Length: 255
Image (cartoon, rainbow, N blue to C red; front, side):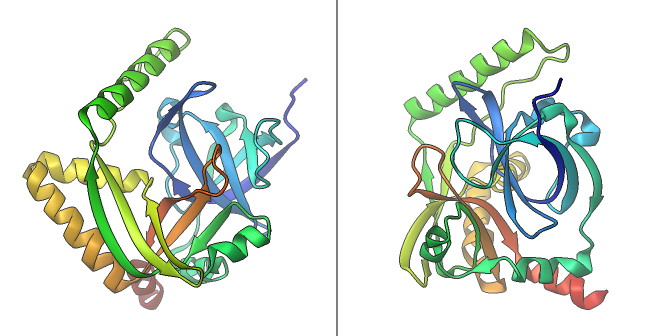
């Protein structure tokens, strides 16, 4: 008999960069919003082992089996049956702006007071910064991914290539109703953008483009952060997703 308690659906808003943990190996922090307008955090999702048809993106509606975890007290967290994930639709472009506006908050402290560990934050006065990881830290990170893949391949008929961690950390300093904050960006799309530009233009030009786009263009045109707490450090809020508002507004106006 299955230990899973139920089946739910959610619109995906967060797909963070892969991380390696001792218990679940390589996983991706995923989060979305269910039909009741409630945030849900989905784990453990070993995203790169999903079938191609199940590799969801932001705005996809997915269906999944779940149970409440015993090792994660965060109220939104659901332990997901990894193999049950299926994409069943996509949030229409004309509906996205209203969808986000219903979720927006201007204060992390307000979210904390309400007992939440996920929030969609509208930041102000953003300053983007790029920090290079130390050689030792990068080597250790690569080692963890390689070991995780080697262990997973013992049970997987389709071996994975070890994930290549980003050699840079991207951060935002920003202001909310609570005051000034600094957050580390965990959004997978941000890392992927850096790698894509590096392949096309070289690392230095890629860094210049990151600063121009994420440091100037996005803040000037409007953006929100999908924020979430760290599983081991409940007072640490990470930027798990970056959502551009200018694209959504343009789509809404043109439909």
